[in-house]
Length: 196
Image 1 (cartoon, rainbow, N blue to C red):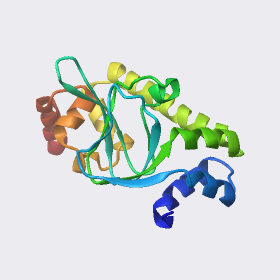
Image 2 (cartoon, rainbow, N blue to C red):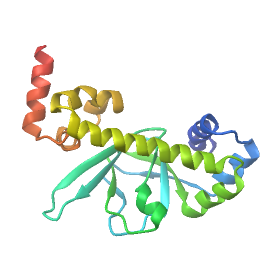
Image 3 (cartoon, rainbow, N blue to C red):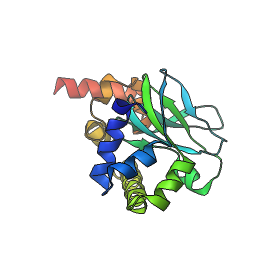
Image 4 (cartoon, one colour):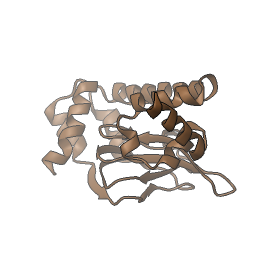
């Protein structure tokens, strides 16, 4: 087991739940550390997601492709976050989403078997699952409210609160897609923001 590669997930887990070193060791023994190249699809649509990813380093985009072939950016996930198509992971149904690395990205892969082991054997494994689910429920709820109750300018102004340094890490057309606007509109917002 690569100690350095597991240190971040250890810290995050111990901040979320009470867990012994032995419990953590037994849980993390079931995981895999893997580095993906930039622009790799690490989870495909139409496949049942059987793992959750914890990001040590890098950036992942969650996207959906509509019937016309247009990609829509749904979410970005950064360091120290868990990411998966959670709904379909839980339901064991084929995914609608693709998960794509936008930078060289190192992740800890948590297979379904490790998650199930954690629920059964970690003293607060169920609590950890609930906290992650609550985080993503609140994120998705806020995302829906932002799309319908805030102007594009308000969404643009708040994106760095959600995703620090996003403008230096993600192509502008993907940010525009996330905000629900065109790249031209994003350029106008940026220009107005720089002029202010």
